[in-house]
Image (cartoon, rainbow, N blue to C red; front, side, top):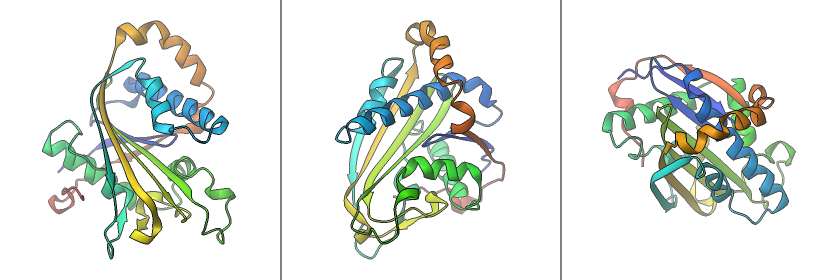
Length: 240
């Protein structure tokens, strides 16, 4: 299967852009995702008890109209090892088996990348913001892991999966390759999914204002990767 997707890291989100499309066409999506995350991070700093995803979606819902949403609480069976990629890949990605397989394959390519890739350093910093400040002997401290994966169907249509869970572990340099066992997870793994379309009626009047708010944050918070290899058929199955 061909998976020549452009992959953007937008703060704590992995964004997959269809083949032959230029990332520049997705500036509204990039700006929306970045500002929504920054807003949620800022509110979380002031009130650690709030739900990060709820604040993030509260912002997006002003302009992106959701037509699908779901929540699922997951766990890891004793003796199993699971990565965040296993939790992420979802049939909601367009409802198409092929597109789901491509998303799976692209995510697994990213999990195999070198840990020195700067874009992965950016992603890791957002997935576990306190990791760099925590010492390795603080195994009793719960750290929240957050990851967004967004598949853009077009500049005005997207599907997303959000993963959140608590662990005492500090993430590896490539956080997508990290394997977790039952004893590493504190509580359940929360998986939220959604599909939405951009409303030009709602977004058009604020497009310039949103672009202005994020223009000085784009360079430090957005990085481009490219996955250009064909993916063998055996890599296409989604992990559950």
